[in-house]
Structures are given as structure tokens and as C-alpha cells.
Image (tube, rainbow, N blue to C red):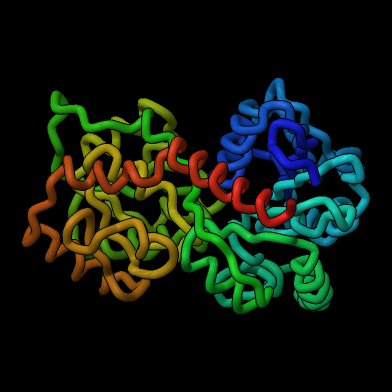
Length: 369
């Protein structure tokens, strides 16, 4: 291996680039560190991932099947072959960003492969949390496919030289399922878009921000606020939107998707953010805290590391409407200081992410001299 990052041939890899969510933002931040690195992936949708315009994105043979760009449940079984067919023979360093198959790339023995692991695939290893691989249409075939993918996924983890986890919660799962240690580097959050605005007064409503899909647990938040009768505003969209609207009372308002300054304004106006999912890390709570808005969250997963209970937010112990109701009722007992809340969010800035990635690379280079 060459002895400095400046002299290395470097490539980035990501599972699929079909939108711009937390995983894709990690790749974009890595590309800022390595602006000449191509980005290999399974499929790429430039219309839905406009932030990647101008980057050297190299999709696999799966790109020929355009319908797969929006059907990840059909895409997943083919991604192991797709990533194994990418050629990384000319690279000294490859950094994969993966919650599925990107870590399964094949490299030369002298090439160093670092995987930034967002999570071991939940639908393979924790089907109770994410049942997509075992329930629904053709469930028998899905179960058989999931079994085969678990075997491949475990073997693919052995191709990684160094794991990075996006939280201590995920580091434990990497150790459990892959038998590998991982360095924790929290993902980058663009704090610059989210600030405290002294000219905007807090209003007497709560906020929920998420894709409207089952595991985000919007349904139990709605059920809680149906009983509480308090105002709740929901930002986001997704396949469960119409179903959720049908169960929501008149005190609950759906605002649709919001981004950038429009989203920041919602955080700035809200009394608190509700967060009910068991996330690997959880970027939305960081955005909320950056605006000085406290978070009422389920106390599991990555948010247990980013939220300070009774200082920057409040935890509820169970993913049930009753547990949320108890937390919301006790919320006014605590004094939440917006400046302290924002200071906690600053620990997850893009600049800190880049510094920690560079420090890890320096260590890796020393070990591989």
C-alpha cells in the first residue's frame, strides 16, 4: 500500500443511490474528503439523487433494469452478484457505505477495505424489527432468499479490513452478527441548515418528522395524540400516508414533505419533536436539537447516545401510545434550554465527521506500512 492518502487510488461504494437520505449524505461527505474518487453502486437514479450530479457514479449491470431503482425488495437478492462483479483491482483504498451488500466487494489482498456500516441488514438479522424479508407476498420464497442472503452477508463481512459503525448501538450489532470490532464515528449532519432563530416564537404544538413507513411508528404517535387531544403536525410522506390520515383526529395536521429552511422553520416553531422509531442513529433528532427543539423519543437505538435525557429531550421506555402519552404529560415538568440543546447537536457536525475519518485513515495507513 502507498504511504499517504494523497498518493492513493481511492474508490467509494454505496448500496444504491436512489434518493438522498442519511446513508447517501455519508457518501457525499466522504466524497468531499476524496473528490477524485468514483462512486460504485448497484443502481443510480439521477432524478431522485440530484446531489450526486457531477460525481463519477458507476452503477452495476442492474442499471439496465430500470424498475429496480424503485423496488428495493426485488433488488436486494441481486446485489451480491452486482457488487462482486465491480472491478476494484486498481485501488489502494476502498471505503464502502453499507447496510446491505456494498461491503461484499472483492479487492486484492494489498487493498485496504474500510466499511462504514449503517447497520447489519435489519430485514436479514432482525426480522421482528423489519419484517420485509419474511412477510407479505411470496413469504415462503422471501424466507428462503433471506436465509441465503444471511449466509452470504456473514461471509461478505470477512472481506472488510476495518469496520466503522455509525453508533455504539450498531457497533454491538456488528460484533454480534459479524464477530468484528468497529470504530464508532457518528454520521455527518449539516448543522448549518438548522439554527435557533430568536425572532421565531415557539408555538403550542408538537412535531413528527419522518418517512411515513411502518417501522417509523407514526401510527402509535397518532394514537397517542388522538387520546391527548393536543396539536400534532406531521412532516413527511410515504406509502402509509393515506392509512395514517384515516386514523388521525382533527388535532393532527399533515404538512407533506419539507426540506432545508422550510423544515428548519418547523423545528423552530414546535414545542418538541416526537421520535418513536428504534433507529440505527437518527439524524432527525439532531436537526431538531440544532434548532433548540427538544426531542421526546423512544429510548432505544442510536438516539440513546445523542439525546441527553431530561436535558435535551425526554425518553419514553416502550413503543406504545400509553408510553408516549405519559412522556408528553410529564414534558412540562422539565426546563429545556435551547442553547444547551443546540450545543449537543454540534457534536455531530460534518466537520467533526471529516476530522474523525481522517484520523482513522492516518491510523490505518500506519498499520499498513
